[in-house]
Length: 589
Image (cartoon, rainbow, N blue to C red):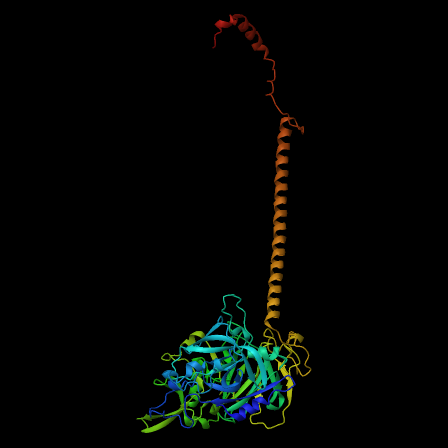
């Protein structure tokens, strides 16, 4: 809801200390204030019509101005998106029946601004997991936010939408996510360059020293809160403020992390126990990645985990609404959840189950039971999961789970774009203490007053110096990621070095084994040659009486002459004399 008081507060928020404060409020986009049970037509309003959960236009609003002279617009806060855009006023005129009244949070009339520039070459499209799509052009305009002026900033102007305007409200968005998720040039130049986001421009124009911001709620109702760009306010949280690197299964352009464990205490006197059968959701056995999305009211969790929570409060699946509902009486529950994020030394979210029962005037419905012959009042529940009959089963397929505002209501959060980290502490809800603001010293500096978790490769209880958690970062020294706070570049370098070492070791082993094979082959060859020489020598000894040289050509030895016996000599002589004939008459006996 836009109010002059909020605009005045925003205008006074910018200071010369490299930090900028911006208040926000939660608005019920769905319609009138008060009871939401009946619509203007007299029919019951359903969750599907209201789009309470994961609606692309439900959440917290900040007030800004766009153009010259300034046009007041309330923009939807989005932590997980980099795009910032405004509705085109031409699409919100009364003669557009479906869009009538849909732009009640403001729109932008380009023909009324002297600083509007549209080359007509840049377009953008935004699709949502829950369905729906918007299309428009990227233009250059002047944006005033929190007292800071950002001239010639690139904004999207939404010209068309694939959403049903009978059930949704067309609103603008203030994207505070990573630059990689922002618009990409679609011009014929094909440069494909990313355009600066609002946090980028706040840094580039000198309003903050690093692209990071804090976020917290003012009270337990969660109706309003504050953004603090470029700084943290130590008066708003109880130490420690634990920072940890973002973890995403597919990319590094979202503020995501892993659920490490989930425990429950059913009464204040009970100790916390694993949620079911001593089996916690463990990031090391079955990683569950979740987006940290404080702007969304509900959390979306795997059914195996969410079903245990449903059992604690008696939540039921509504076939007609296609959402999980809970008896409104569960808002008196004393049970608590303790959800540890990232790893064994990550921050713990202390969650009252009563906080997960959305207020009665947010949405409620009465259901008649023939068994008890009475009505049960049901409220919307802040934990949802995919159901086999739900239109949101694609959440289970894509595993796009999230932690919403109801679970994060009592948390102080810092989103560090430059350092790719998140920091979380227990918020001092409703604190009226004097501000204690500490700004980031430089771009990429560590989150002030924070303590880092151990590197992911360190085991619990490790005594290695490189595995010691980082201490308080009030010194403000430039944030150089060391072993106590590794980033993906360091890990990539270590992986490359490891691969090189493995290759070198492998080549060394191969070379040694090859040398050994060559030496064995040479030895075997020498042995065979020696055998051949020995055999040749033996043959020479036989032929030459023991000589060691073998003649090239050998003649058969002449027969040895022997004297005949005396008694046969005479006979032989006689025979010789009588047998002499001419050569041609030789007789062979």
